[in-house]
Amino acid sequence: MKFKDLSLEQIISMIKWGETTSREVFDYFLWRIQTYDSTIQAFNYINEGGCVSNTDTPLAGVTIGVKDLYSEKWIPTTGASIMLKDYAPPFDATIIKKLKKAGMSSIGKLNMDEFAMGTSGENSRLRTTKNPWGTERIPGGSSSGSAAAVAAGLVPAALGTDTGGSCRQPASMCGVVGFRPSYGRSSRYGIFPMASSFDCPGTITKTVKDAALLYDLMNGEDPMENTTLPGKDVINPEIWNTKDLQGMKLGIPKEYFEEGLDAGVRSTIMQAIDDLKKLGAEIVDISLPMTKYAIAAYYIIVPAEVSTNLARLDGIRYGHNSDAAHESLDELYLHNRGEGLGDEGKRRSILGSYVLSAGFYDAYYTKAAQTRSLIIEEFNAAFAGLDAIITPVSPEVAWKIGEKANDPLKLYLADAYTIPASLAGLPGISVPCGFAESEDEEKERLPVGLQILANHSQEEKLFQIANVFERETPWKEQMTPPGFDD
Ligand code: GLN
Image 1: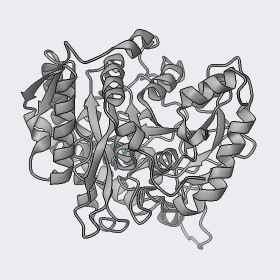
Image 2: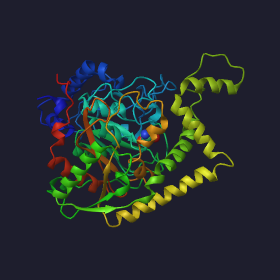
Image 3: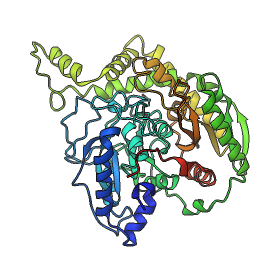
Image 4: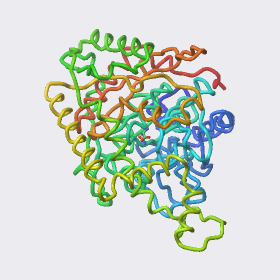
């Protein structure tokens, strides 16, 4: 039996029963990284000394990969940016602290779009991660390395973050499970901020239960982070015994099935909805008319927050320091930031400063914030009569590297189905639900994810529904990309 074919839960139980050790597991994944990462390019840093063993902890020393924007004490943490290329933080993010205490062996830093801005992974300044289902294709983003590494069996699970879809979308593209909690449920302390009113630490795993297992250890109030919700959410283990979806009312919003959704993805999602129905769920058609304003609102509010968060990166106390001669402080900033930040970082900084500037603030930022409130109200009203909302994650399967790289607008549009829930701070999960052919000439058969959204703080229901779907459909067993078998 190979560890790559097992869930996190299964590996932990083998360690606890003495059938293997955390060292053996760690060395196995290290070897897989050494064998396959030259092809996948998921890792920015391999932490060879990261193995811990303590069978009395919940994670029992199991191996986990970490998105390269979680601060880990003295471990390079770059945000996949030239700006922080040589940076190693002097402290652990709250979640890293919690997971270390819970017995995580951290095996390295996973590539991503620079500071989590992107949808394809191509905005990384360090390397371009490949999709294990077709290495000429994007793995999705921004948690590109996390999703590709889990799909290729280089780690059994990985941490990601989801601001506008960055756990759900790459998971969908790579045939794995991507989860984001409600905003405020898990601490952002020590995670490089992208858009602070959106950022959610999440996970990429092979199974729904693994997502819940990590969520259980990660979530909870943090005195270091004043947007965390009080207390801690505990998932009732009884939910794993749920046999079917009798009594569950699931809404299908028509706005997520209109123009722009590829035919192949549509039919895979329709099949999944049919399966949910066969499992006993009541399916109801709903309408969320505010959906059409979500991308516009998101791509105003997010750049506004990005511009303030990236402003601290001036290369003076830390960060990229340009060799170019300067004659003024402005010129120094210009060189440091000009070389340190990539195109998307610059684009969002400029756009964000613009929408926040006097004279434009009300026309753009305030309007977008008002739109966000209406989207929240619309979700609230919809959830009054529903257990969950079901939609596609992405309008298309993994496209080719380079296909949209020079067209930011096309990339923004690809976020259409993940962004609305992000604006509302809702929890969401992407579960593999089959395959669809790419619409290019290759007609490659690639994974599709089903998005399940729940109301705020309803993570338990999300896991319950997702787990029944995962268990009662054949897809999980088919989500192993060929070619990584050793
Ligand atoms: N693709 C979205 C963006 O570029 C979401 C990114 C994310 O969730 N980190 O903003």
